[in-house]
Amino acid sequence: MLDEFNTWLGATPLSLLIQKVLWIIPTVQTVHILAISAVLASMAMFDLRLLGLVGTRHSIVSLSRRFMPWLWGSLIVLAVSGSILIIGEPKRALGNSVFLAKMCLLAAAILLTLGFQIILKRDLAGGNTDLASPHFAAAKIVGLLSLVLWVGIAVAGRLIAYTG
Ligand code: HEM
Image (tube, rainbow, N blue to C red):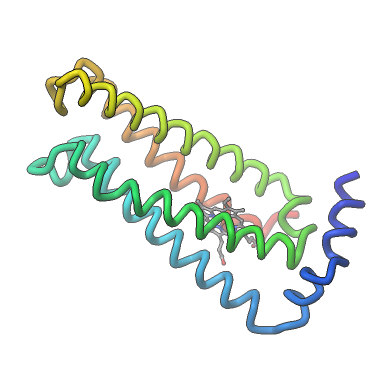
């Protein structure tokens, strides 16, 4: 079933165009890597702040306002560029269990980030800020888990090339 889908997708005019025009894949890969840098840099700064290791002069809320737009914007670029890579060579990613693992880790990282943002907003609405909030005892756990997830996604992304 998946094999049939991959064969169909790989024979569509869009896939054939991506396969034929030599500069498309390297260009899209470059865009993917630039967006990865933005995600990893933003989340490293935010998560290390949650862990209390950097930027402690700034509130968690202000760093969230600064870095979250970079995360969501870059994720859109990653989804579009990643989809172009898949359409150009469907079997390489869709037939690969490491790619599936990468998508599961990505879903977990997005849910964790969204969940934390919702808690942050509720605390602010309730008049709590940063460490005055009852939830910030958990901030370090969220920061550590988030870091592990984003690095894991990057490692899984790189490993797709070496696994079948
Ligand atoms: C919906 C989102 C995403 C999709 C559909 C996607 C898809 C892909 C695909 C198809 C590849 C090519 C793999 C190969 O053929 O070797 C790739 C590479 C990669 N991806 Fe993603 N990706 C997404 C998000 C991310 C995120 C969030 C990260 C990390 C924070 C990431 C990190 C990587 C890395 C490190 C590579 C290897 C790049 C290289 O060596 O050229 N990806 N991705």
